[in-house]
Length: 161
Length: 293
Ligand SMILES: Cc1cc2nc3c(=O)[nH]c(=O)nc-3n(C[C@H](O)[C@H](O)[C@H](O)COP(=O)(O)OP(=O)(O)OC[C@H]3O[C@@H](n4cnc5c(N)ncnc54)[C@H](O)[C@@H]3O)c2cc1C
Ligand code: FES
Ligand code: FES
Image (cartoon, rainbow over all chains, first blue to last red; front, side, top):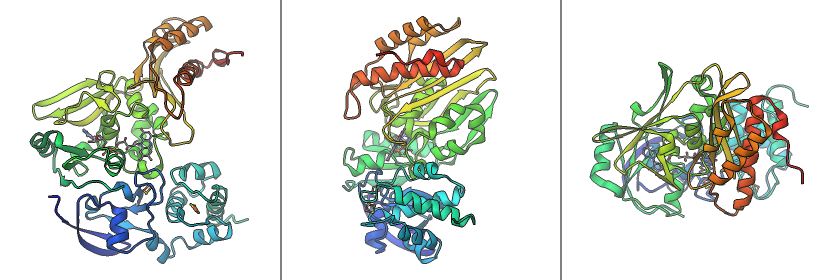
């Protein structure tokens, strides 16, 4: 069965069916089969976080999940979060605080940031840093990213400065 | 890099998985959370012909307590451990340690069975199972084996598991009212593998350790249950008893040198961790006085 295997799943709310090789990872499936190139691929072994997506509500590394494992799953990518408006305030904060330069890390950062904003809306800077510790940024030095996430946390809980 | 080609099959039950493993022998690899296996495949450090995905086997899930024993199914994810009130109550060492394992996105997939079977000597959970005197439950086609955690790990990425067996659960005695635990690791960055770490549990009778289990990690080719703890039990700990214990620990260690730390640095950090653990558990900060230069 190194042959193409049928899979069906939901991606950003739409049903998708495809034939994939077992070795194809979810990041490459999203990028190459579906043209969703917002999910970036950096290290391909789990350390950089550029490929972070949501599967059944949990953030995961798309480079460490096989497309065949995503059978029946609900996958959400940066395109989905962007188009739905779910993170428009967070994206604006990234822009305002200069939290991105080349943008390579940004989709994964936004995924991880939205995850902590959802699960721990009162998170402080230290908790934000820790939550983002698995996402590499080679440009910003992280400070501005933490600023942007913190500003969004404050704004969402109605305590904007 | 991309993984080389392999076949993939999803096992429907433990029996089904064991049949597949028996049929394919060491050509097959078990796929659990994939957070160690997938990097190895992508880097082509491993190229199995078949992946047997155990992720859908519901009998391998779940956390339960009965008759003083806490049982954790192999497929329990790191995030499940982090959030479980049963684990916080009965094995608080695990709740504390799991926050040091990798990062949120990895903890959402990685499993306890995968971590123990993978047996990275710098990994937190193997040392915890040793510190907690856990039993690792393994199933093969001929039945079940119950292995003391301290006997399970045999080398770097090596355990007593055969390629035809499945790790199904971990069991450990629940924490007692006079149990105490300590966890700390030195790492360059939160979430990284440790440079040196210690997962310890003890039984305190007044100000005396009735029992003390020290599970060191990243100090050799496998997690170490330090025999040196015998210098610290049975009577109130003195500075000289601690010094004897540290010297005995030093003799037990066989640390590797790598880009993170020299062997000497690891020895030093392990001795420091022992002092910090004893001082913390006994509430006696003076025992952790740093050596004067
Ligand atoms: C960037 C990054 C950072 C990490 N940092 C840490 C860290 O700081 N500390 C740490 O401990 N870990 C760390 N990990 C590893 C992580 O904890 C893994 O989840 C864990 O080591 C393996 O669990 P898994 O379920 O993903 O196993 P898999 O990757 O699926 O499997 C690992 C190995 O175990 C075998 N296996 C899995 N389950 C079973 C079973 N039930 N029976 C028999 N064999 C089995 C597989 O065949 C494979 O050989 C990190 C991983 C990444 C990618
Ligand atoms: S590409 Fe997946 S973590 Fe780097
Ligand atoms: S903005 Fe360039 S890597 Fe983060």
